[in-house]
Length: 134
Image (cartoon, rainbow, N blue to C red; front, side, top):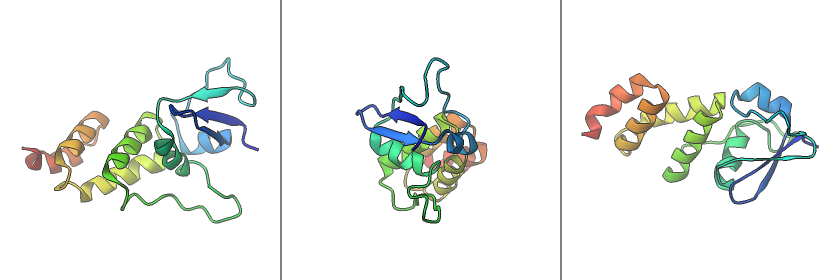
């Protein structure tokens, strides 16, 4: 059984191993007063965002080989919500995956990508998309 439980903004529970969190993320700080085995840690994001985000951290089935989710065909509003959550919680594999995919989406979503890249410190991406955002 996982040793920490998170609750989404729409009240869905996610059980995760703290070991995976520590290895794949730098931003999931659990308050010191929380007993990770019995308490639930509330998060601001809805379950559809956390479901994707936690796949970058925690294998779905430990008996199968671990593969991170594809973001290529992800619905664009979910794409940007998960990308923001990945930055917020510093999920290493996800931040790189989303930033890389954004280089391929510059002509389709220049304003969103310019906002994201400026906010999160991706200057080459911001430079690439700036002219398209005009």
